[in-house]
Image (cartoon, rainbow, N blue to C red; front, top):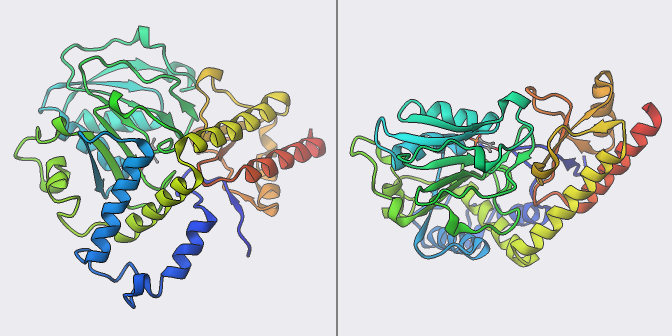
Length: 360
Ligand SMILES: *Cc1c(COP(=O)(O)O)cnc(C)c1O
């Protein structure tokens, strides 16, 4: 079967050129006579990959020198635990914004260790908006302030970076990292699982201001301790070599395309087109407040939900797959990360218009 347009929220589509490069390099990587999955992670060849991957990420996001880049396993979910374990003391207060399913999970995990103060909560309107920052009820003693920059499930994205003052700001950027430039200096910690906008699952990135590392209790296990990752260049044990290798190829690809300004313009265009098509019709709708609609995850519902299955089947027959919305939201969701070409969005919009003509 030929390639489809894959609108999955994650694991998500990867660039064709990256897949082609992987395919060509698999049997004999860098003239080692082995694949990347078979070489020693302590070999010079692999160490160079790791170093270049971190440097390319630093270049792309313009990460200042006083921030470390750490690579871990356990996805973004493990960071729900590592953030409190590294930034707070047991029982200390941590501020969290509750704006959707992912921040809810982060809160539940932090609450095992910290005293979580929920500064804002948008569950009253089904997580379709971001509460205005002026209404947030912050705790002055909080060890940090955590928010999820883009709630992947409901398609809600913060239209602002919270002003946390002296309190370290922590953000789950799993579904928007690298979708456009971001001002790293505003943050204490940024983390992201790889399988949305970076590469294969099994890898999480943590960008952390160096002066926040080394504060965890001595009882925190090594593999949950940022300082261990920092000291060992994320190689305290065998890292996920294949995921790191592919992430490195994706970073090279993004640099070749012109970096995050270029990606940002492209992503804005893709999202604007799709929302415009949804708003123009009375057949489709998106429930999210306009100022916080996600650039990367676009949920939409059909005016008659009994047509959902027809829509999903017909779309798949046209090479447009994984459009089913998250089970907690229903309807459809088109995830249009960096690797989704603009042509994929164009084909989706044409398909939606054709479907509306037939069933509307
Ligand atoms: C997917 C996702 C997660 C969970 O990621 P895992 O890598 O599966 O742990 C957490 N936060 C956000 C915003 C996500 O999109």
